[in-house]
Length: 274
Image (cartoon, rainbow, N blue to C red):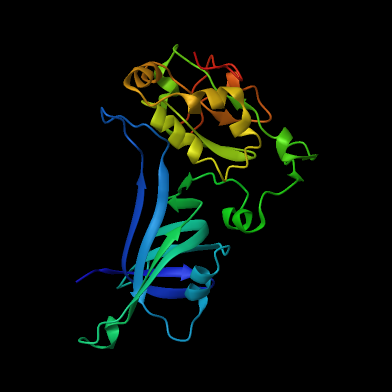
């Protein structure tokens, strides 16, 4: 029998937890080396379905609702807290309500899946660094014509927000991290691409990143126009392409951040594919 109990504490209420798991991880390359920043924090929690309490249902049904909370482990004998896992700015991204009519009433259970922006375990904080924009609101309302410049206190139109840098850095393999990086107005992918198809995949995933004229740039069109042939794929695999957005800093001076990322690069803005 377990010597402790686990609770979900949220919105001033506590729910007994029957089962919970939490996942963090990194992508790896073909040699098993870390190839991305740490990501995750998604937590699955199973509990008895609460009676006459709409809190969890409202959290799930409202796609813009974010909540803070914690998972608490307590000793059965002394009620002392063994561990606390805190989460911040979290969405409820999944819910399953399960009932087994062949068992007793305790078989009426609810499983929720929580996706937080930040999670704190044992005093250590992991931050997924989400952009400020809510993607659900963007889908519903379209691009925001203007937004406040948080660093300079000025408003800028989306067309003025973006610097696209693409090019080749053969000086260091430290720029080869696959993943995403947070910038003031959007998130883009970067890394080493093994084929034309992988480059198209990166660009295809940028539809919600609010990158103004990305698809109209000649260097981007040159990439997308390449045929997916073995020869072109060989050429692409020899190069290290990087794409990012940074409206405040010179992209050639980007520095490593605590979550991974890339070191300084010889990439020049607007560089064309050879």
